[in-house]
View 1: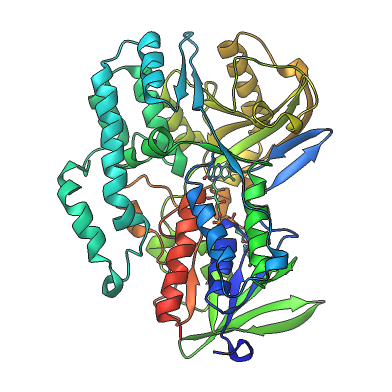
View 2: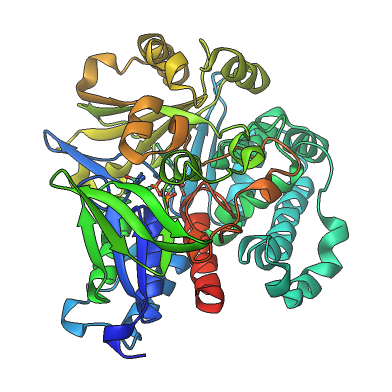
Length: 505
Ligand SMILES: Cc1cc2nc3c(=O)[nH]c(=O)nc-3n(C[C@H](O)[C@H](O)[C@H](O)COP(=O)(O)OP(=O)(O)OC[C@H]3O[C@@H](n4cnc5c(N)ncnc54)[C@H](O)[C@@H]3O)c2cc1C
């Protein structure tokens, strides 16, 4: 196909999923345009600079960098790349540890990347059978390797394209997978020691779920950190989105910022393009392929209001949201590292409180991310850039008025756990609430990861990557299969673009 009669593709949204989809479609030779309602790329992955401090506003944990490198390599070898526009290679560093865990009883555990060092650290801190820990991590690896090809790297809704080779690869391990019970029950049965159970329970929050309700299958997540490792992108998390944006430009993707799509146009069951307003005038952009990277809920409610919506999928429980305080701290804290968790004393009660009141109450688990520990230029000399987050429900109405209470609970928790107050050292502050997340990214109710995984079959209820009702319409991003978080959003773009290659009209 010559470039003048190449198919036209429109991607709605320049989140990480939309950027990755645009790169893949441009590489396939489609004339690809991205329409983004805000003024810049990245969606939830943004940064802010205040008085000498740099803050990553959204994600802070970077795993599976190979998925970014795959897009880098794809672009560099693409027949459509303009070499003079290629950005320098994406750079990141491997971390020697993932998280520093703290409890009010004085227990501290550093999760070293080196398995031996981690085991030694755990055994010195708490009483635990080291074999149980080894076996638990090995079990996580088994689940990861069995489910990756089967559930994460292909659509679960396209039986004619189902890769049976992935099933055959997974088959010998399927009987070892934890099909029944909650993540918490699995962790308690296998590890027993309460601190360690809490560390492994917390992985449910990596997709915004409650470990006491989420299926034991989420024990797939620890392998990401303990097996595959954690990383830090040079420049911070925002550099990931900036890099994909630059790759897209080098492939000739046309980016349109500040342009909110108002409708997905379709006729006789086939997509025709998108509708938007430019300078107050209605404007139609024709396309044979449309990919929505916007949250699937507003995609149906706002962009396709005339279509019969998949109510069961849209009405699933949302994942948690967060209240985040970005503090410039005029003091160094040697005990803290890049990722720090100050655990609540009763995790079950904390999640019950989030379900009932929307927020964790007086004893929250507090996550503190400090990128200046790795990248010293992120804060002035002797200072630190704290990203301080608590989980809350995706219910903007309930949370907004509670922010002062949540802030006080966070400050008290830090004082009780670290042994000193930080309030007097806060020299800059900004706050992100579920309402802000919804306003800035279109994520329905400010959920961080689309739907929660609090039910046994949640993974199968995520929205499909190809529309059943409209030919030429596809979906990617955290609210559709295989789920939220940077790695899964990148995989969703890979699945959607593969479907486009094989099924687009
Ligand atoms: C505070 C926070 C912490 C997180 N921590 C982590 C973490 O540590 N690690 C991790 O992997 N993940 C984390 N996540 C989740 C991760 O950020 C998301 O899963 C991922 O970035 C979502 O990407 P996406 O492709 O779904 O698009 P989004 O980032 O949701 O972007 C969608 C884009 O679509 C645009 N859009 C919507 N509607 C329209 C329209 N009508 N027209 C045009 N444009 C439109 C929006 O403006 C937005 O830019 C976190 C998220 C948050 C908010």
